[in-house]
Image 1 (tube, helix red, strand yellow):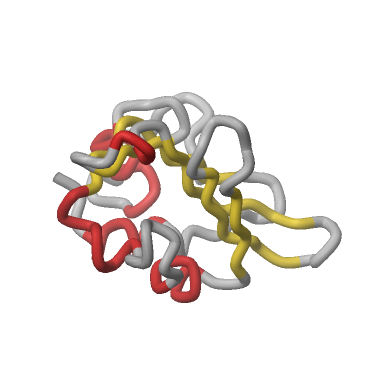
Image 2 (cartoon, one colour; image 1 turned 135 degrees about the horizontal axis):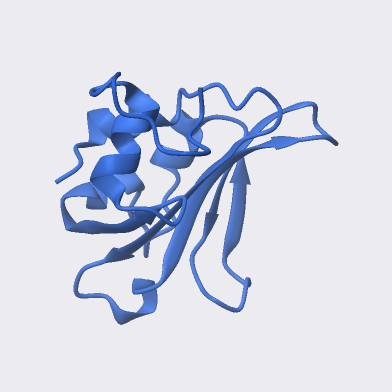
Length: 120
């Protein structure tokens, strides 16, 4: 299981204006949130990283934030924040990869392991 502290550390990763972080997840027991995304990417328009949610496949529940802290505290899950619901979040994949393995690439728990195309 990925802890909130680990996901917070992942979101401090420097995108170097070319990488993005994309996390597919679901919120247990609420079908509305069974296929969601969150991430971080460089915004050319704003000239900084933007943190975001895509909570429904139709794109109607998409939200952008200037910081991870603001994203993590936004009450987007029926009035609750990511921090509030973290114990009910299941991360399906990170950047299309196994969540635990990819997390290690970002936060450095296994410095000898680098997947092809992994952020440096």
